[in-house]
Amino acid sequence: MMERSVTTERTTADELARTLREAITRLNRRVRQARPVGDLTFSQLSALTSLQLAGALTPRELADMERVQPPTMTKIVGKLEERGLVARTPHPTDRRQVILAATEEGRAVYAQFERARNEWLARQLVDLGPAERDTLARAAEILQKVARA
Image (tube, rainbow, N blue to C red; front, side, top):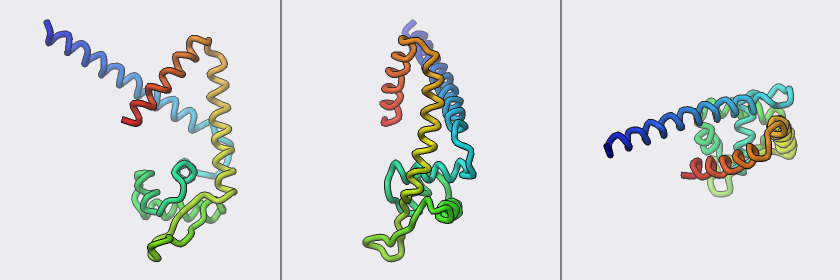
């Protein structure tokens, strides 16, 4: 009987994991689509976001953070530099390296995208009742805890 209980709990956890992952994936995709029309690709916006959130990074650190190969990141950064959204500066201790950082224009573009995403999500949340919003607030806390684990 004890084994059945553990199996049932595991199945429930597996089902919850699948359902939660699918919901998060769909929501993330929908939020990513809620952006101002522009010519930044998702990869470029993601790199700009990483620089905004993490601060200045080397190209290798940015590639690792974005989980892409360095040659791919070189292309992404090149496009962002062409638009004046990212700047390179010499590394303070290693002359072979450079540091990448979002420019003032890059930070403004990032803020515009963030506003659009937040506004879209806020519009969706308005239709929910107070209890549902409270549940989502608690779920957000729990999801942040899981993400930090």
